[in-house]
Figure 1 (cartoon, rainbow, N blue to C red):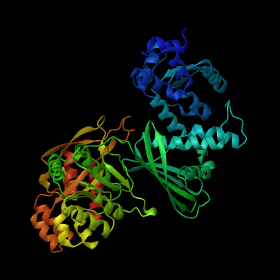
Figure 2 (figure 1 turned 180 degrees about the horizontal axis):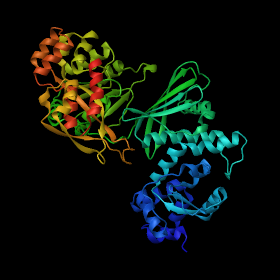
Figure 3 (figure 1 turned 90 degrees about the horizontal axis):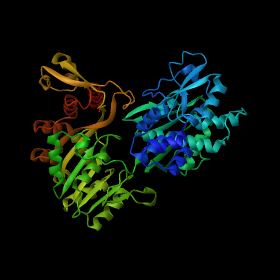
Figure 4 (figure 1 turned 120 degrees about the vertical axis):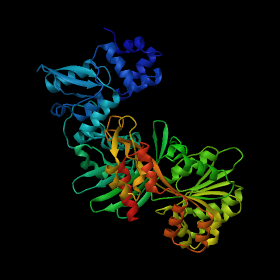
Length: 561
C-alpha cells in the first residue's frame, strides 16, 4: 500500500518528495489548497482526485449527522477536518465520516476511542467540510475549545493545550478571515446580557454568525484583543474610541476601521473592512444602463466641471468615483485625491488621506492640491462650506472635480450646496452632472430562475414605484432567487447600483440661479428625460439583474426620504 506522499508524487504533476513532505506538515485544512497551487487544480478537484486514487467515496455535498457530532470534541474536529455524515452506516459497528484529506491510523484510533465504532471514511471538498464545521460548531470554535477546557480545569484529549491569549488571537483572526472570505463590509461585536453576538454585513444585509456556545466566557478578552490590535486604550471602557487595524488575508491587505462604544452590557465594537487590493470595477460593472454610461463617459472627457455622486452612507459612492478615475486614467493627466479613508489604491494617482487630528482636513489638503498642478481632483466628500467653495472654484479655473454629497436624490445636492452658503450662480456655473445612487442585491447568476409575470400581476409594483402602467408589457419575464452553494443558499450574490442622473441644462441652470426648490428642479429634470431611481430599478428587474422585492424595499425608502 502506497503512502500518501507516494500517492501525491505518482498522481499529481509537479509534486516532488520534498513538496509532498511540506504538504503533509501543513494543517489538514490547507493541504488541498497547497496541492492546488502547485498543480493548477482547485481544492475541490484535488479532493476528488484523492478520493479516486485512494478508493474512498467522494461526497460533493456534506450532510452532517447532528446526534453523532455531539460525541466529537470541537478541537479535534477542527484539527482533523473530519465530522460524521448522514445517513450513518447501517452497520452498528461502523460510523461514516467525511474529511478533506485521506485519513491516517491516528484518526482511526481517535474515532474508535470516542464512539466504539470503526470509521468509514469519505472525502469531500475542503470548502464543504469547512462550511459544515462552522455551521454545526460555530466560527472559531476550535480556537476557543482548548482554552476553555484549560481555563475550567477540564481534561481534554488535546496533546498540546494553547494558552488563552493564543486562542483569543486565533479566534479573532478566524472571524476576520471568514468575513473577508464572505465579502463582508462590516463586523459587529454586540454584547448582550448573557451572550456576545457577532454579525457580518454582507451585500448590505446583516447576517448572524454561528458561534461556539462558550464564547461568552471570553467576551472581555475578545474586546481587549480587538482594542490592542487597533492600538486603543484597553483600560478605557467609558468613552467611545476609534482606531485602525491592518490585517493580511490571502496575500491582500485589509485596512479595518475600528469603533468602540460603551453599552449597557459592555463595549460594542464595529469593524469596517476596507480592502486596499479589491478588484477594480469598471463603469459597466457598476450597473449603469448603456445610455447613462455613454452620458457619464462623455462628461468625464470634459476638462472641467464638477460631477457629484450622492446617496446615503454605504451606497457605493466611493466605488463609483474609483471607477470614474480608472476610466480617465492616462499618462498625460495628473490626478490627485483627498479621501477619508483611502478605500482603493489607484495606480499612478496621487492619493492623500485626511488626518483631522493633525489639521489635515479636506479643505486644507484641497487648498494644497491646487498648488500641485492637477488636472483632475477627487474629493472624498464635501462636508462643509469651505471644502465646497474650494472645489467649485477649482472647477471654474479649469479642473475636473469629482466628489460626493450625502443627499437623498440628485436634485437635493443642488439645494444642499446652497444651504452650505455657496452662491447659486457659482453652483450653476460649475456643477455639470449629479448622480444619485443606491445599491440593491444582485441575483445569483448560477441559480436564479425565470418567471413569467402578467401585467395585472405587476400593477401593484408599478404603482408603488410611481411608474406608468405601460412601463411593463402584456407579459414580462423576470428572475427570482433560488439558492445554491455559490450564494450560500440566499439567491443573491453581490450588489449592483441603481442610478438617477441629473444634468444641468439651461433650464435647470436658471432654476438654480433663481433658488428653485429641489422638487421643482426634480420635476424639470423629469421633463427632460431623467430616469428616476425607481425607474432604473425596474429596468434592472427587466434585465434579470435584480428582483422586484429588492426594488420594492428601496421604493419604500424613497417615499420616506
